[in-house]
Image (cartoon, rainbow, N blue to C red):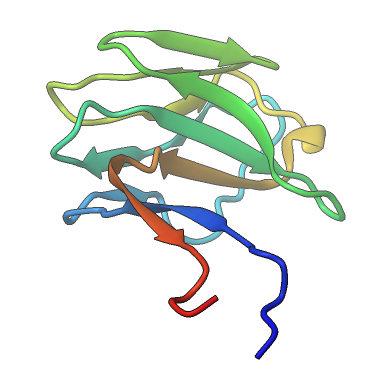
Length: 129
């Protein structure tokens, strides 16, 4: 019996587990007049040190990173939007002092995935080859 040339495949499986990690944000459509003050609430629950993100998705486009925060009381700002990570209240509320029609979009609050371990799987030639 002939065997094909030896092939070795090494797979690295990254297994992320959430352990109940979650984010909750203001639900539904928010309708504001131009120049109004905007607040979109975002609270989170995690057993790991959090990294929080706000993404924006304009009509016909893919999601884009708007803000990111890692350390407590870290304040991010971009395009007039601001959010401060508060680990005491577990919040990362998005705010803007004066919204414009061009701010019409879908906004997502996200908590970073946490990889808590890796597992290696090695596949080698079978016996007899």
